[in-house]
Amino acid sequence: MSGFQAEKAVVLAQYEALSGATSEDVGSVLAARVAEAWDWRGVHPFNAQTGAAAVADTFWEPFLAAFSQVQRRQDIFFAGLNEMDGFKGVWVVSMGHLMGLFDAPWLGIKPTRKMAFLRYAEFNRVEDGRIVETAFFCDMPHLMTQAGQSPFPPATAQHLVQPGPISHDGLLFDDAPAAEGEATLAAINAMIGDLGTWGLGIPLEEELARTWHDDMIWWGPEGIGATYTIERYAKQHSGPFRDAFKERTKTGHLARLSEGHFGGFFGWPNFRAMHEGGFMGMPSSQGKPTEFRVVDIYLRRDDKLAENWVFIDMLHWMMGQGVDVLERLAKQQG
Image (cartoon, rainbow, N blue to C red):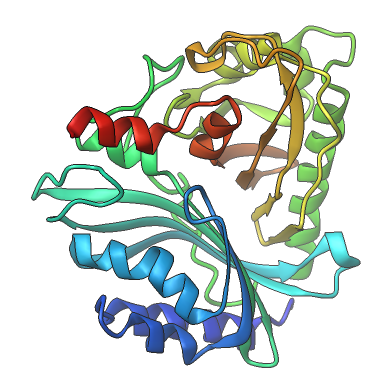
């Protein structure tokens, strides 16, 4: 057995405490289980923060002031050793939605006074009973679209409130056999190896079929959307994306891990590439590299990947293109 019960318990206790937190006391709730110099990375505009007070001030206090009756609806929960540091650090991964009643403005997004789902993926490194490092990705454009304030042109794939894995077994509160996690990590690394070439000299659909099941589902971020089967994924995202970007750097991750049939990674950034124009209706970056902060969570079936939940910090990427989406939203509503 992989043996991550102590680390999982710390994160689950933190989530339980946060479920009862308010915008007034969330800072002290966070501080109870994080290191004093907690290293926290969030999507734009939250970015990098240090310590519980800064994270509370930047994300949690405004969020809890805007959303009432918040529930954490986890679809995936697992832990593992980080391949990127030689399998030393233990990370605990959670993915799902923060659901609540959107009752007050948040980041310039007008409230709906209806239920809303904020997609999230979180990686927590636990050491000596404390959370010492976190990557928290949330899909704010997805929330904007739910609220009728989409910041992007029509997507190549489909907007959905995205479900969890088809297997309905993504919550690994008990530790999974180590061999299953090793098989999942091998499948992820095989996919990364093919992706790193950005073209094996064979048709894209044949390349994808090496590491993906034909009935794969790619649960992409708002602005791109979700797509089903290798054929539609190639047409609705992978092909157009490769056409729009050139000179892709190698993939760089801060954490990559797996447990059971689930695994994932994040980078800060994952890669850089030259935008030649067309992605999400944006013009060329005129020879300036653009960078992507990305989280990927995977479900393996047999020896191939079956589902992939993807979080891209789109607002950060748009800032690199010279477009401040949140500022533009504020001006439209001003």
